[in-house]
Image 1: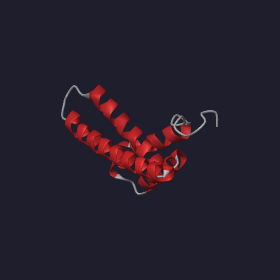
Image 2 (image 1 turned 135 degrees about the vertical axis):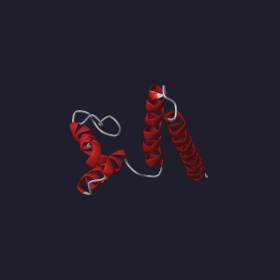
Image 3 (image 1 turned 60 degrees about the vertical axis):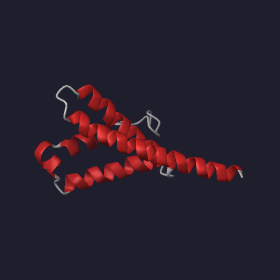
Length: 112
């Protein structure tokens, strides 16, 4: 019975996290329309990233796996010259950020 409650509890938490993530996405759209919304936008985007990591964990995806997948997508975007990369170089900057270790802290030891 305990295992069944754990599974049910986890399933409910996954649904809550998904709903919160959708809410954050809606807030990004709303806030981005505000000329003075930089701090709110930063807060909302941070919450969305955090929720993504928490949702991944609840779905059985390790933080390191998610980091590796993100880095793979960044490298693919660089290779394919995605518009954000060819116009601004944002993917290369993000790759450097990941490689610098500044992302360590979620699921990783900062000293590695």
